[in-house]
Image (cartoon, rainbow, N blue to C red; front, side, top):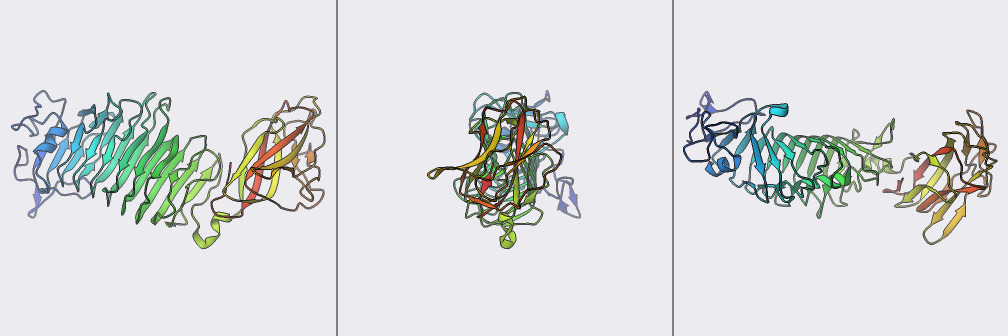
Length: 449
């Protein structure tokens, strides 16, 4: 045994156990780490409660592989990693427990170089209650998982002021049976380098992602299935919010990925692409996507074969209308336009502008889908223009009342992928307008933003 206040462990009816950490039991050596203890030292005679090691890295080197050894990291400890492989977890079967809560919790910080990282290079390593803090912008993978059966229980990661981690947890295909059971990401000011993803899995099979909460702006997605598909994934109780305004999905999927997802909630900045590709996974009825404030949510995946092509809505930003402006972009396949409605948000001046709608195809060019509305001169906020699609030259209907009745029943317009634009006669509007589109995708994977 190493020097420890538990020279023979703690046992109950002959079974070694230290309670309170998810039912884990420890059968090997027990070591302590505390950088703030004046008696701490990285030498072979240390490692006890009263004379702890100074660093986790040294403590790992004192452990015996596959012996059930545990390292307790005391409250207030700070482990600073300044370069690639600066903290190397390379002894199989060890458990590291981070003690404390909130600001006093023991933590690992990555500084000095963007390649600074903690390498998981041996199998069956478990981290309990870990906290990680980015101390430099644009870290490229501070938690680098390269071995099987790695587990995180109740972990957290913090970015900071003008500090954004490009990709946080990066796992290679060797990280089979990866388990992250409880994970919370705390974003900083997001004034640093653009983030790509937070959890990036490169062909990791039989992984479990449970109780995950990731909120922030990610150019790729909060969770990314990268390079190769994951197989037999288990996802449960996950909340993802991607505030990237491109917009970007919450999950970057692969057509061949498999697994089961339960209670996965995804919120994107705009549009309805919550998962870029749902693959061959089974998405439970409680997996939902959300877009825009007050959006009620819609199912993720293609359960029952029809959910992905159900009727949807899209809402534009509020802006002055300029001739030729694109208000919606359709990609991935054709849509059926069920309704199109434009609302005056702030009043126009006396300019006698008119509004009509057109669509643009990459090779087929422009075609108007309405005639011009009546004059928008001096219309008040709340006035609105409605597409009447009885013919492609039927005038859009202007109403200055709180409700509209179509003069004739609208037909539905089928359009190919492309842009829906406004055609403004006379001049740009001075008031601002918002546009609402109700549509039905004609294929799985169609997006409208």
